[in-house]
Structures are given as C-alpha cells and as structure tokens.
Image (cartoon, rainbow, N blue to C red):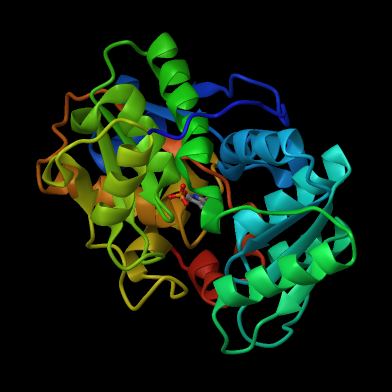
Length: 318
Ligand SMILES: *Cc1c(COP(=O)(O)O)cnc(C)c1O
C-alpha cells in the first residue's frame, strides 16, 4: 500500500518564484534565456529551504495523530533539523533534535536551533535512530505524545511536497527539459521524479546517504510510483572527500553564482548541485539549447559555519 499524505500544515507562501538567470547561464555555457532558478530558498519560515515542503506533510500527519513533540535526527548543521525546530515553533509543538558527537559551537543552523527553542540531544557515537527512539520513550513516560520525523524529512508522505513542486515547475515552464537538484536524503528528487518523470530530473549526490539510487527508488516505491532504479539520473561525481568537505568544484560554483546573479548558495548541497550542472553541460549530457531549471533548495545558515568557505570567498575568481 502506498503511503499517502492525509493532512497538510501550511508553513510557507506558495508557489515559490521562478527567476531567469541569464548571467549564470552564460557562465555555464547555456543560452541566457534557458536557465531558470526555482527559488525554494524563499519559503519564508526561518531562512527557508526545501525541507519546508516535506515538513508541511510530515508535521501535518503528526498533528493529525495528536502529537505534541517532534523528534528528528541529522548532522549538527542539518537544515532539516533547523526547519523542524521552526515548524514546531510555528505550530506550537516541542522539538527535540538528536545530533551525533558532542556539543559544538552554536554557529549557523545550531544557533538558529537554539533561538527557535529546540532541545538538542548529543548522541556521542551512538546510533541516532536508537537515541531518537529512547528520547521518544522518555517523552511517553512523561505523558507526552512524540512523533519521530524521519531523517531529512524523507518518507513517502514528506516527498509528496516535491510532487507539488514539480507541478509548480511545469505550470511555469511546461517544456522544461532538465530539473537539477541536490540529492541528500532523497525525498526532494523522489517527489520531483513522481511529478516530472525520471527523464527530466537530474539529482546530484552529496554523500549524505550510502546508496542514493536505492534510496530514491525506495521512496518512489513507497509513494506508489515504482520505477526501474536504473532509469534515475544521478551524478555521483561531486561528493569529493565527503559530505562535510567543500570540494574545489563546489567552491567554484559558490563564487560563480554569487558573482553572476548575486545568488548565495550553500556549500553542502546547492553548490554541489550547481557543480553537477556545470559538469553535465561540459560532458554534453545537458545540451546547450536545453531548458534547465536549477532548484535553489536553501541551506544558507550552514554557509556561515563552514570552515572551507572563507578561503573560497576571498579567491580572485571562480
Ligand atoms: C536537505 C537538502 C537538500 C536535499 O534534499 P533531500 O530531500 O534530503 O534529498 C538540498 N538542499 C538543501 C539546502 C538541503 O538542506
């Protein structure tokens, strides 16, 4: 049985803007009129980002269930964790975030988690899922009603938010050839593929999961949209030394977007995704005449906490 979403908690203003990006297009080697930015960083709530689309449905399900506490897991600079904290503050639910390791300096997303009033549990080297389950148990013994929001907000219910985004994209650009997005926990790409078909979506793997193809295919199956995993278009050439390390290509992409369109990307996801688009135009898998949408999926707070960014920002050119 596919998991279908039941109730939506509206957390942002929709649809997000679609903006032309002629100077970035030329820098990449596309025609100036053929590159568009889907501005999912402009979703409004607490600096915005793609996780809001998923949280509208996962928090909707939690509220329908009578939950009073949201629990989720992620990396300390998780945008999903920050936006779960934001959703909880907006709706009036307690939020507990489970992060690996020991307390680190409150910068970037962590600073916002504190400001938004979330409790943070540091899991050391224990499994995040195990600590989240324990946290839920201890909530229950105190008479609370916790709901665990999955890693990255990515299950079939959350991914439904990106099926709606796909519809917004074709409403603006019915003939779009390629929608390029970062691939983290996979719900964003899965929802886009559910709405646009596998041929029109290019996911750029960020290193957040071990097997991105299985991850996205699994989400699509849960959505009742089973497809051949081999049909998914995924680039895995932008991971570099790992999820948390700024690659040279992503550094160039950060500089290119900032200096061509004053578009500020994040070092972990959107800069990698743009580097993947640059690579796809270079190797011909995206032709120069194609109509391309680049999903700007947010992540700005992590820019201010990433140790690799200052040196790149100072560089003379990209
Ligand atoms: C989480 C995230 C993504 C990837 O989305 P998934 O649905 O997890 O694959 C892309 N961009 C930003 C800024 C993110 O925070």
